Image (cartoon, rainbow, N blue to C red; front, side, top):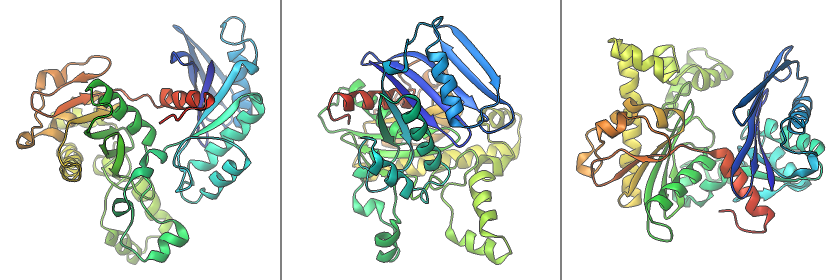
Length: 398
């Protein structure tokens, strides 16, 4: 069965074609600068990469071009768009309504639209991708896989804010959490690897990229996570501040800042970029090795925040079987992993320097203490394809 996975951004379209249930990636690519005068498309299949430079007026033009490449007889992928049995769409926000992945119909699209205010940068683009795919792949079933769905198992004491009840009842003001598809995938991989399926398990998953989040996973279910109503809270990120005293916002308003300026400052000009002028951890690590004090401080703050969450999540989990590092930084940055686990030996968390610094593909252990420390490459696209496949079979994908 051919399943196409789409991640539609405001000016981009990421895609992968899978052969399911084997999970074989037949092709993958990205369309960038949609709506600009000159766009870029990459199309990778086998060992080959095709690039197309042309203006993509909108997402429909972009997806039509992807479809054209998929059906190119030279690539031998599909002969007709009808061979695509399902399209799995990443949708960032599912609110309280969507607790699981679902078949898309008009009511689902209407609900996604209702959630625009909770994810104004993502849900409109996600819905646009759905509507375009319904036209281009008209015979395929369309499925929505929500980033927030994995975190709908949070208990009320974890997802509620200590603000007037009316704000929750009227506006849905609560913790939703994000990166759920990644946290679900790597926690399931860890549970299988450790032989803990259908057993008690206590795992902390740490997704570190330009966006960062950490989750407490008990018996395969998320019971707490660092991102909240939006993706700004929690860990220090590439350009986002993470947790911050709300008084800072009031103070900046009193100093003459406009609310939109503060939104931009906290989302796009803070985090590692705000501390160092750069949000690339590779560059920051190089500067720190050369004695750059701003870079050194930023790394200490970055790891300190992770350690605070590890400690609090161990408490609510009542122990710990494993810590999982994933995503671009989590999988590749040995310095971050080392600093995040330092001085935690009394909790059974002790990293092995040689294993940590040795680069290898796939899942691997890097601990010398009681608690397993795992590096597990995330694969959100496969997780979306897997869930879509199970839905086509009438099965529970979770």
